[in-house]
Image 1 (tube, rainbow, N blue to C red):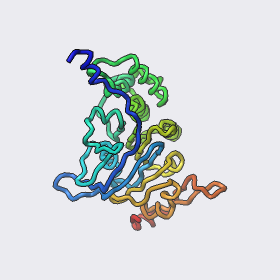
Image 2 (spheres, rainbow, N blue to C red):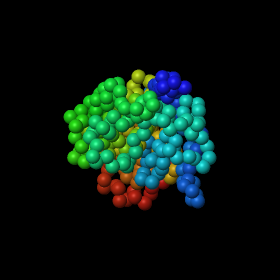
Image 3 (cartoon, rainbow, N blue to C red):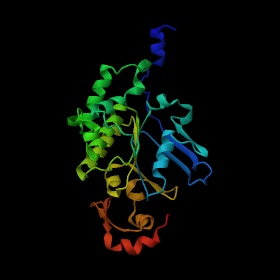
Image 4 (cartoon, helix red, strand yellow):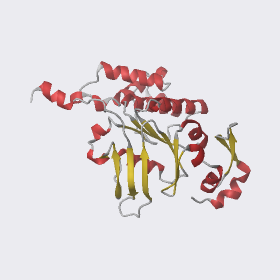
Length: 289
């Protein structure tokens, strides 16, 4: 095969589009341990922004890794656009799914721009050097994530919040239709949390992609997400419209804290207020639906 034909064979065209991510009777547990997640059946469609919420240890991070094909279930299946996610080679999968984990590998000596540029790797023919298109994509992604002024800074000099913005920019530069983000608002101040989730909203608003984001802040989910999934003890306690899923009484049973709703004139819940005085008395009543 000639060099030209070999390059064409390895060229990485953009995905045709996002149809759905579906989980069917998914069960997961680590080797020689009893399964702790599932069974779970769930579908993510185009234009949907899912907030995944639940107590610590509920299985949120594990669920997101399963969605990306980073873990294999004990039973059940994860399908992307109707095809088993494990039938898709990792590099091709990276053109369809962007994953931001809670814990990231050290990148101390790299600049912010270098980190974002690395996200373009799945699109490089023959794994050679980055193209002008890659450089421009990285520049635009840094600007969209509010990290344009950080591009020349070494990662070791950034605050936790600044580093988080750079990694979000890398996710945007990867240009995959499905974003899977594990607590992307961690380490960010209130203004930055809102800005980051607005970027995700804009990214999926045209219906060509979707987002699955693990969150701890109920009000952020109510404000930004089109859908919510509440995970308790490795099972789905509720899923659907955030205002229905994040019902104050359900939240009280799940988190052991009393919530008071804040509603618009039409009755739509827009936020909840934690009643701190009730936290101690409710702490022993935690249970799922």
